[in-house]
Image (cartoon, rainbow over all chains, first blue to last red; front, side, top):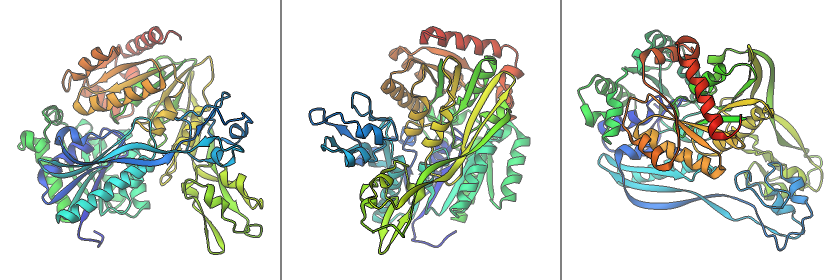
Length: 292
Length: 280
């Protein structure tokens, strides 16, 4: 894969949610050496639930602004309501913090300077230790925006941590979807593993992330989780991947051990390294490691 | 009534609930797929598409013949989407939020707004069921404006079912706000519970009545049920894991049409929601 600094970063994404990104990344965490873990699914971060990090450092994530109208200064001229394209200002001249886009147009044009524009704290970033190595993770405040920026910050922190500790690999758990947070999680990565499932939805959503990784020219590989729930679909997806020039690095059978491991706060490798699913995951990891 | 289907975690079964509920209630129902990053409802609904539009967002275009390089556009833009560099003005349309600030502030009238295509919006039908969805072009960053476009299809007085995207941030909020009821779909696992709590945080902020559907209800532990009980959130339905259901889903088939008994269960789900939401 691409020549860069000696720290390599692998991101696990899927397009469709719930295909097993986090469980798989947790398993890789048990198998890989000299790595930093990074949870870039800042909306619904779950990796910490199995790795139980001990937080060493915490910082506020401050990004973006929200308009706040000072009622005492406001003359209710209505200019702000006229200009706001996000319909965030009520007839009573109160700004709805959820609808406010943080564009500052009302602040700029208010003739009596009645609108403040404070910087928001929209989340937290953590650097932690876990039993399988250092980890960077984050929490976006509920109903907050700017998730893409927090993803970027988490990845930068992970890279810094890897350099400081002399580690040569970053394993990153990506978010679902194809827009802002996903784009932020894959740009500049050394490789992407796309985890899909043998369903029409899984196939459809994978097509879109394949288009995305092609668009950003990031090397990608595909693996199919719960492949035995529809073997025909598995073959269709594998054929599609090969047509697109993407290596298929493995199939994982449907196995309730994944859920049982999660309930025990373990990776599937820790829970039962000999089960079929764990064996399949080890094969996938070996193939990925040799390409990185 | 507007019923939204949400979940913090992806892959818990939002699409399954949204599509089956819509088809079970067919006639006088509208299904809106607001998961514009990964829309899947159309795979199950197979609608006859009657209307297609390319959705665009207004972005600035600068007439350098009029521009005096005063820099006010750069100053007002919070998103670094317009920058004065030397004797030219660069725009970064993918960063633009279409707030109109630069357009308003330009003293020379040098900025006009042009449409930048960001996705497809489609409307269609399947028997009595009306359907609409958006599909964001791959590589586009912002989902919310297209979600707003899909939501513009909401018609008062008609049962509307909204399939929201996963997560807890802006695309979810813009999808579910204004709903009369939110169905939170989860699975009884530590990840499912963690993300359910985040989703409950959203519906509490938005102050919308809500209930839980537990999917693959026999794989995991009892913690989701314990949480629901502590919080006083009703469990509206449970769907056990079955290879038959998983297989039907994998082929894009609907439970209410493939497996006897499920249509009645989805109608019952609707009736329970009507009770909790206090309206129909």
